[in-house]
Amino acid sequence: MTTTAHPGTGQDRAMRPDPTALSPAELVATMPFARHTGVAISAASREEVVGHLDWAEERTTLGGGFHGGALMTLADSLGAVAAFLHLPEGAGTATVSSSTVLLKAARPGRVTGRARVVSAGRRFITVQTDLTDEEGRPVASTTQVQAVLA
Image 1 (spheres, rainbow, N blue to C red):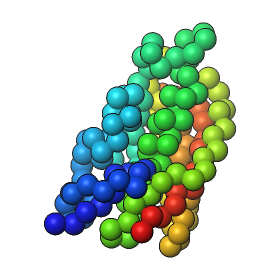
Image 2: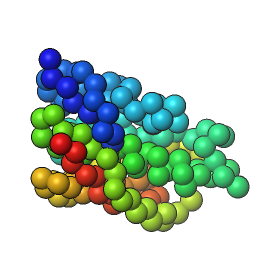
Image 3: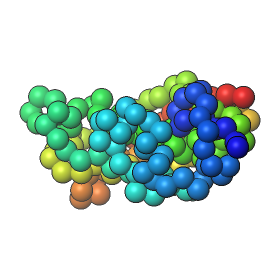
């Protein structure tokens, strides 16, 4: 049996030998906070991870728009999975930096995120995640760097 890390953590857990064979639901299940906050993943490959977060009152700030922390949770979760899918066998990952630019208020509806690895080195993986509203308008852009943990 192969051990591999949860996306975004250095914690080991037993799973299938090929982490790219995990379903989107199985990937979210490895991240309890993402699951608890309502993050959903609809597609995950080495090329792109796509997911969303639906509006709910508990995810809002003043005025009823999405809270920036909720948007950053979506971006961080998708970015962690993107990095996870680029790890060498037996390695884990942990976020070492994350920078989010909030571009516009996201109102009730669904925010969709697309995460793509822009650089996958031996020690660090850089991921760009773009969030859009239901009309396809940019909401936020996050760049994060994930350390590769041996």
